[in-house]
Length: 215
Image 1: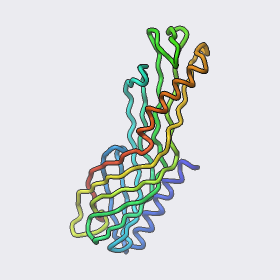
Image 2 (image 1 turned 60 degrees about the vertical axis):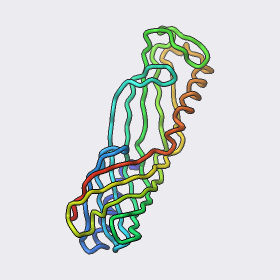
Image 3 (image 1 turned 180 degrees about the horizontal axis):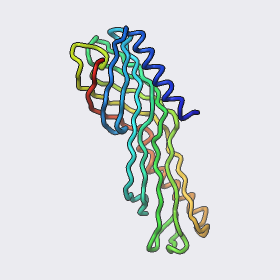
Image 4 (image 1 turned 60 degrees about the horizontal axis):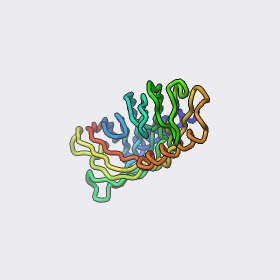
């Protein structure tokens, strides 16, 4: 139910925008650091608009973390509601909103040579498989600026730009060994090292560009 709530809110917000703006609304399609996104915008008046957005991007690749090679699966995106403020009644906007955030990283390592975990060195047989990941807050506020008003003329097709930050909080790191032969103290030390590396992502940068269509 919690996963469906953001989508339901997005639909409600879009409906509000359409009703309040006298059937003037727009659709935007964009790509950026928060994935491939679809926006629905309803104009309240010349200064305000409500925007619902859904973004998603999944990517698998090898990644080195604290000198250990992992196979990583990155999930980016979320669903959100935003208020766009157009102080000059043109395309420039200030934006504040809230997102159901799906950003997370799943990692797995099957070492083929000795590796250092925490303060100790372990053989592949002792490690087995290292499984872990990084989870961020499920909901996060968003603040940004941008350009473009999908629901307002003149013109039906426009360029849209977004630049902002998603305040997703500190990552919750998990890590475990399949054999149970790795010291918990070393696992905890490795988690601490990974948490330090993840501090750079407490604030997720959102930059996107795309096109919008007024309907």
